[in-house]
Image (tube, rainbow, N blue to C red; front, side, top):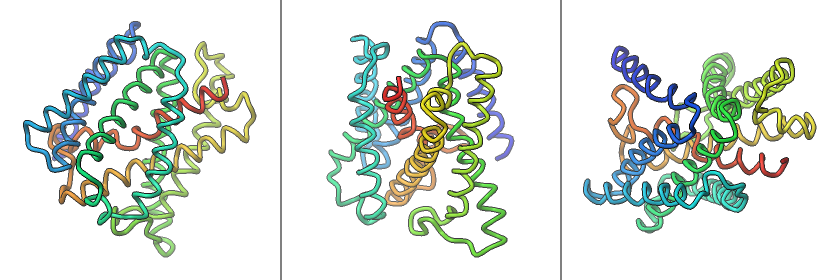
Length: 283
């Protein structure tokens, strides 16, 4: 299993890194579009669609992304998709987590499919716009999710074992704890402060997400980082909720040793659009 995980990770890095640093953002947009197509197929399967119907869901997602690309939305200074998407993620996420696993099947299948495809489309659009802004900006947003996950793991392991482990959502994801959430939030704030200071020291040609918030005041960087860390947890929990409702351990086996695409991007789905919204607000 470990060998398989390493091989898959190396293949993904060999594809993603050249696309990420390629001068033309179209290469990165195309690679992410392929990933979103796979995630949309997984979404259909997790929501009770047949193989063929799931392919249709994937095709719709690809068509939406390609349409936005063709009309120039990837390079337009949009605001409404980020505001609308953030509102849906915050309010819808709160409702879903409150309703728990039993609440998911009560939502009509068609609505579930539409919301999932729109969420993937919005995340793709946000990722491409972030790459167009600059690699430093995109990496600062993506690293936030990675830091939140890593810090949460170590904090949950150390604090959760040292003190009484307070479960975050035992019926959805039994392994997550409040200690992990607090550790993840602390890690994200520390990352943001260090990244903003590094930008200033090395005079980054393209300011990171953190530097843009810092320019309006350190308080905004801290609040923005905390909000983003919380929403990364929401994205993770919602995917776990959907998988638990479907009786699935992983979203698929598209990435051997790592599960599915949704398993790898769940926390990025809310945070990418939210990062774009905050960036537009301070620009």
